[in-house]
Image (cartoon, rainbow, N blue to C red; front, top):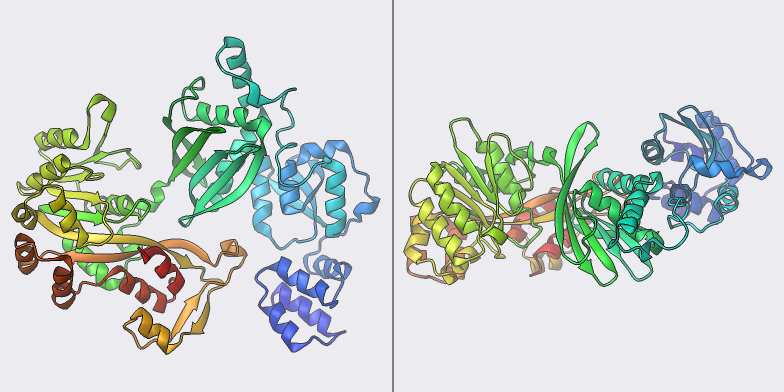
Length: 562
């Protein structure tokens, strides 16, 4: 019996719960929602809830109204953390911190706190939430949601006013950036991002604050903000760990740094852009573990996977991944290389930038400033006797021409192209000036890809869809039961957790090659491929995943509405 069921059972001993309210309680997405329903409908009191928790978990009760609050308690826990998680720091003995809470169920936040403050153990006492919030106000004398106390060691005056154009001010800025509160703030930003599986961290200066956002499963969401006065110290710290020029604030800069997280090393690619209210940072999270999976674990459906594996067996020719920025094209190419990388193959990549370091693969960084373009790099690589070449992106006609001709002389070329569909790659390359007969001779496969969010398996729910909706969306299945998001603590109440790829694969047989040579229109090529080559458009692959309960119809429509 779950804690929620035990609470309901305890209440039902003394009170009769209306069936409608009982259904709402059973469907509550998390404890906070469950607790609010109980109190709102007068089914229990907070004291009774705390009594149940105390009895169930053997956690002592502390009446904060009788607890003497000391200013020294501020040193035990950053203000932002205390207010966000509604926990009151009581005392610390050695590496064990004791916190007062009204919700002992959310063990994840206590794990977070252990990492943030360097404690080995968190002990809990139970207190009323109202008393906790009042105690926090007395302790910190600040509003929740900012980092004033978290960065309380800031010197007098505004860090924003410091200009790094003198030796004294530069030294002052560097000193501030190394203050423990600033270091902890950056650690918190990075750690929280990794815990939430963010792909990017955005640090955006606003007129009155410094905003931090995470991109999780392709969606950007605001996390928290710093006071404006802390902006320069935070930015300086980010520059220092990224090995960037701390004195330069007028030009864009790019850097990298690494962190250790849960026993593995994770790279961060850093981009700085000068903006109206200060320098904007975007930190790209590059987790090598996501590449160690192989194609079978990328979530491809069985039919597209079979076509995909057929394509990458080609000894030479060109395989193109197409789609907009952020659709996972490069990651899929890395996974292909990871799968076909054997000691008897000479594999070279030309990238801008190098995102992941691959064992046994020669990787070249494009440096446009000194003339090392994709085209220039590709010419040089061809003199290195390669078996497989990955070109990060075909951006211009020169690169396209060299890549096509290389694929005709015994090399397997892997690259990406910005088109919406697999068939659209043909038109795009012809528009770049590639002769159709060369294109027909070189192309092995064109693969369009999009990423959709996966439904959280802990809270997704089934529902019946109307026949007219099925017909309108042209879903080729007799299924009428689909899945939709609900939201729970495991998915941060979004209803989604993780992403999976949808594929549209066009394999070039002799008929399609002849159609390319004779410049047949895209829809005609697609119609033939659909009939003869198991060609399926992105939405069809997406809807198949909807039927399996992997994603939702709304999510498929969101990423394919172009």
